[in-house]
Image (cartoon, rainbow, N blue to C red; front, side, top):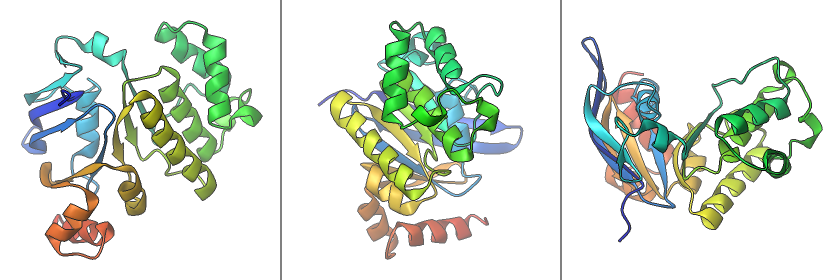
Length: 244
């Protein structure tokens, strides 16, 4: 059995008296897509920020590729990338210029070839020379995804990656993510408020509520455990219990 590509043990984060993440433990295997589900304020964003080394845990440990993030941050993050509907890129640069900056920061070779491949994959040809501040929300989402794919990461953290996309492009992006997983063994941590998307994309799901893991398993296992008709009903039940 292969070792986890990501191992989180007893991870906690407190901000003063508030516990944003409370003693969570989970792992992601090579090539696995793990869904991270929970209502707003459940601790998803704080968890991702700790995995990216942006926030220091109060307690617990994070290991990726067998290395401790606290002592091997640079080596680990060279093999990691992140995409979110809620991040932005330098607004005065064109789409292609932004991708070149990312490629140089990661020390990639054959940059133009790689940029051309990503632009084609994400159907960005028509706006590759457009200034970033003039992009639509859907185009901006594709740019952040392109930035994430460009570096050929071994693990990808995706925070609502299709939230601003029309159904056709969203379907293509999900197909692309699954193909990347199939062809390269890419592992992913995936968040979305689209329950159908979570069921389609996730091999397993962990459900956070008030910073704690309250359910873990396949979508069907979680639905069965809570005695609901589908994942959306489970989400509504837990969200209402948390006071959101």
